[in-house]
Length: 215
Image 1: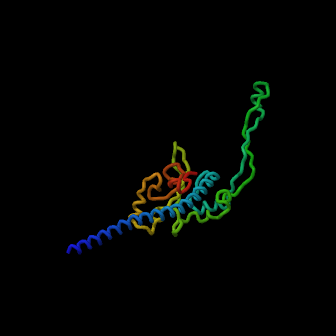
Image 2: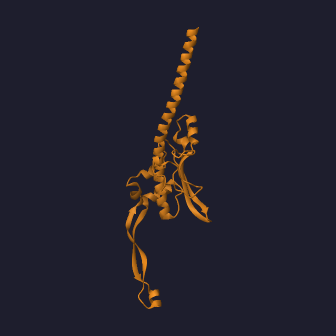
């Protein structure tokens, strides 16, 4: 009987040890996969961020949808300028003081134009698929509008994807735990996102380890 009890205890210890190892190893595998998927999504969000910032620079607002943004990148151009300071005769001061008086002015010369797609995406067409969430058949959610700040309407935008979408095939308990993350070196909250519809910000909510999160 003693031998049977010992055998049962060894079996229980073995099972518990395996379950403990599997739990730890399972979380390690989850974290490794999470980092890979987040990185691919961040790369897309950075491309969206670049496109939106260029759109605002030229149009004074952000694009409402991806069709509008992609069409803009296909056709828009940045104006290349050069600023230089020079001295010119201040006619009013000269008349007033009856002596030649100069004033400093800034002249902006137009040097040429360069396509937005070449400037931001190095001549590639990856911006045409930046709306697609890697590894899924989903698209990033995106919206744009304005919020009031000091009674002034300020353009804002947000692009985001739920962690549920990025981690669709992972254990639900791991995903739910990840959605509750509050850490300086983690992606906080239930979404991976760039911009905000609630505050004036074009930054991403990922840590610097995934790439620059501010434009």
